[in-house]
Length: 228
Ligand SMILES: O=C(O)CCC(=O)C(=O)O
Ligand SMILES: [Fe+2]
Image (cartoon, rainbow, N blue to C red; front, top):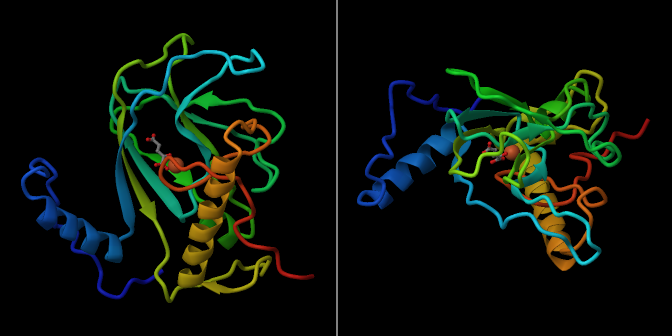
């Protein structure tokens, strides 16, 4: 996944005065994203308190709906005391994961630790050997240990260069360029988001959400397996 000019590891982008140097900092972020990957600072506002839907079922709101990131690897930096991240282990394939058993495990803060989420790209590039991490950020709803305060996180999304050639050793999926992979992922998630917006009351179990950056869309295969 060579990106031409390597990033300068000594360069730091200070966000401290983002309010006053917005354009300058935005262009620095843009340049860094082109050479290193995409990252986001997420401020998860608190979703409405728990209540019941029209059928009387208790609603559980999420600061970020359940999804898998579509890049190679996501590095997530959290702050102590700002819990909420959960993962759903046991994923078999992108399409079937979590459609049945919704058992979510809390990801506990580890001082100095970086949460590494496998994305759909690594999953397909490894011929599904490494499963992308299905995750969500839960809003408080009265469960023990719920965080009712802020949650800030920094997510670094490692995505392929346009000219990267992507195919696993077993050739389970057709060869694609990074550009094709990114374009497909974006249109897949955009289409799924539109579908979700058209059916807002869909049960999350039936319409599993996916997407980069607190996204919400239906989980579909990152790539169609190659014909046998
Ligand atoms: O803020 C978090 O902990 C997770 C955010 C996330 O999953 C994402 O931005 O893709
Ligand atoms: Fe994510």
